[in-house]
Image (cartoon, rainbow, N blue to C red; front, side):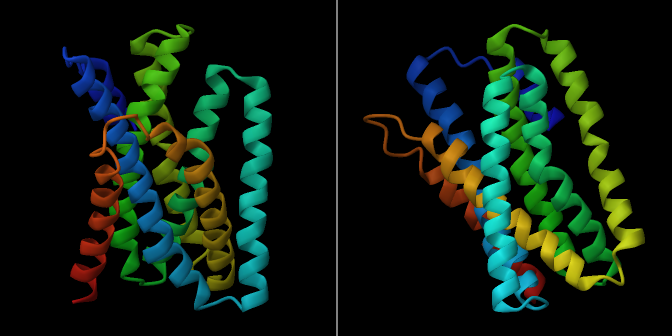
Length: 221
């Protein structure tokens, strides 16, 4: 997240149309990475532990919870709400990541890669949105992102220490996060991607998802 913010801080493309395509492609790449995390790690791992009924309940609960949170944050509409929105999928994923490593799952490495790929463009986009509101300086925003980044290791260690013997809880958390992430993709991220008369931007989503596919193939061998 802080690295994405730093790139956004110093990104200075002079050509308007190149800048537009670049920024929207970054958002699309983040969407592809999120989608691959759901399709290749979170849902498949969850289905190993949960029944069809519980999978459905947790998945839909995640989507509804993120919808209600989105409504609440829209009403608050300040920099704090944007920071909180970034953490809604970051923290559950980090907890699941720590638990996956504790459980000896090889998907932990893939999930770690996808979390990194996801949060880089997320930090880039969030920085630009927060800077546009002019409530905070660039230095303060980047500092906040650095502080937020430590919540990842803290959440991961918590999952590693406390959820090793609770595979059902891990699976429920992953499925809940999956529903929420998919809601976020189609509600918040995907609508920002299209630009009229520019057809290459969606390729960012393909590249993001492709990174997840390649990572899965490497680890499976």
